[in-house]
Amino acid sequence: MNEKEITGALNKVIEIDLSTRSVQTVSITENQRQKFLGGKGLGLKLMYDRLKPGIDPLGEENIILFMTGVLAGTSAPCSGRFHAVFKSPLTNIIGSSSCGGSFGRMLKTSGWDGLIIRGKSSRPVFLKIHHDQVEFLDAKDLWGKDISTVQAQIGKKENETIVIGPAGENRVRFANAASGYRYLGRGGLGAVMGSKNLKALVAVRGQYKVVPFFPIKFEKLKNRANRYINRNSMSLLMREYGTAANAEFVIRNRMLPVNNFSFGNHKKAIGITGQQIKAQHDTKHHTCKPCSILCGHKGMFNNTIKSVPEYETLALLGSNIGIFDPNAVSLFNDICNEKGMDTISAGGTLAWTMEAAQKGIVTTDLEFGNSDQIIHALNTTAYLEGFGKDMAMGSRALSEKFGGKEFAIQVKGLEMAGYDPRGAYGQGLGYAVANRGACHLSSFPVAFENFLGFLKPDTIRAKPEFVKFFENFYAALNSMDICQFTGYGFTLETFLTRMTPRFLLAFLMQNLPSFALSLVDFSIYPDMFEAVTGMKLSSREFLVAGERIHMLERLMNTTEGIRKKDDTLPDRLLFEHRKDDPERKSVPLNPMIDRYYKLRGYNNEGIPESSFLKRLEI
Image (tube, rainbow, N blue to C red; front, side, top):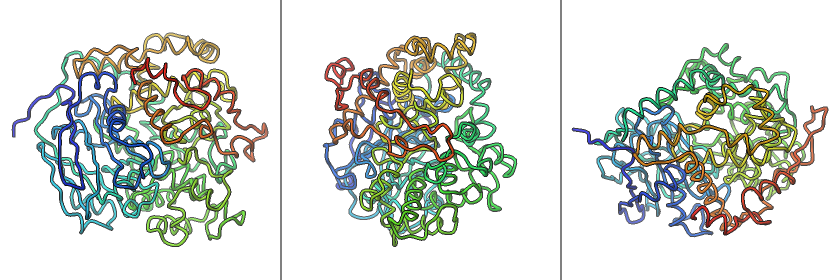
């Protein structure tokens, strides 16, 4: 079959109704592309136009969008990503999840920039998308099977799949979906697919080849991007140790979640560092294509070659539940990956249950540090057996049912990632105001507070400015769709940043944040957008697009009832200190919230002001 060349985007999305088994094409206008870029941004826009507020996330009216960015199918570094957007059954607000792997590239070559899934199939089904066509195939024999079994049955070299496990079928609220060895982890996408009787999707490599509109410019940008990555210290750390490289920074700054965020460190914590895992488990690269950072790794765990658990898994399914043995964490990770559950939410829910049992709030054998009980609990959660049926609701719902809200470590229903904000106040603000809940990827100020040392971690100064900037910036990156880890190299290795003395950079960021942020050169991203699509996009327009995308998501959440009361942290983080912290720090959130709201253009209740929405053309 001869491949047809396309430049950047086909500008068409396929809309599939599972109830009627009908298919139609949705065209993407140039204006929509310019304003929302693709990926998450375009997915939110298409959802905003279709989804009624107040619907049941597990009801037939919910919709799922799988969206690619303009770089999908090209050789741009770290561009093997795609996005899912849906209403979350865990948070009851807008959910989104980013994923690596090949599904986005396969979907693009089959002729589509994205998929919209609506309705509910009357019986288990999986979809096969190829050559501009959609097949509805019987999934009766796949229902109930683990993820890897289904992948082996329906996957082939020339296609890529998205598959849910038993947890998704049983509508565990934090069920995920797998694409190869990568996961659409957060918010319960797997449960939404399960509620629609949708076991899997298959995208087959099709008839299209993605070619940049300006190929010479694209090659120059790609080469420059790889140079930035190959000399950046954070990129090289992740290449060497994977995301587990983060553990050493976190431990050094006493912000590792231990025993449900009660402590910030532990004498056994070195066991879950990237350096220790590399030395003990003979790790090698195991990464997405096309990728230059190479943060994915595999190694020997329990006498078998397995993916190295990500830092978040090592923290939430490790230290936060009293486990510091990577072999044990790998086993928990395998269960979650096979049954289809988000490891962060699973770990946060286990930790709440362990502490609630200690306090006599619930009756369960779960206790910190007991691996056998954890294995049993994960399996019973996936199958809604015994107390696992309650755990399947997540920590917020558990605490609302039994009590113990003050130590349910979640925001807006989403369990918190592995950075204790009492050691990084900006990260605390980022968690509190993040659109999808306690998300570390909405903004990631902890990198500047603790990893790179540009911002003082225990002050509120400059934190609202940096959280707002990172939210806009990452919203744009997630709409390109390109890996957020490129932000290290693509911004810190530019000429001005490299030539400015480190002490001066830190002074400007801490004391003149707006000025410092105005000097950040991220032009390589809009330049790539233009090189691939032929559409002019300035750095300012790129960042405004990110702001527009973020504000649209906030607006959608306010129609679901989100207000200022929801932009907060658990009482443990606001009023308690880590038990091993001699300085007895807690997060001073309120003054940061007030400043952030003013910068964002929210009113006193956290609703975007109409003047800001008008300026952003929402």
